[in-house]
Length: 252
Image (cartoon, rainbow, N blue to C red; front, side):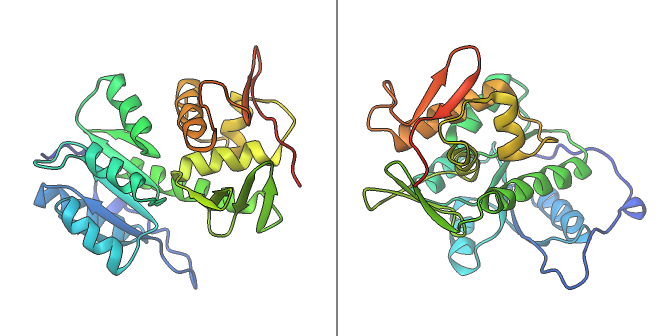
């Protein structure tokens, strides 16, 4: 299904940096015309772009050459975008996902984020906005690994590896999305010190990120389910009434 804003190829600004390896992007959409359009546009903007028509083809590409980010259409025949996103997160895939949808209901955005998407873009959209959102999620993912000076450290019962963006608890790997990991990194960096939602957005995703307080609450709920023994009675990430959240364990 094709929904995209108008733009002029002659007005494209190529953002490729010399001697910098381009980010690898996979576009997943069942519409061949839109796939080709997005592939061309993203390539023009400095991304190394591949385009596939569904979840099965994406699976093969992930095995062959893992991308830095995925652009995933929600409404596809067979396995839709939500199912693909859910399966990838269940498999432990942390690759940032920007989900595309023609649905305008805010609940769809919330469901997408709860499923594990890192950002959400409604159709029709300006392709330049997709470029901006991809750059934003890639920047957030990169900054999450740069905010700690130690590449690997322990905070409470968790072992966090910033370079690999991996988390272990009692030796077992905990599967987190890129956004969840960024939030955990921000909280762990300030362990013992409450952070407002605005501070969490700034530290985890950057000041220019379009992230609502509600989205933070949704991601905190998911994060608690992943790292807490009991998400309904959390010991690690606690709510501070009137302020926000605090990581209760101390940095070792």
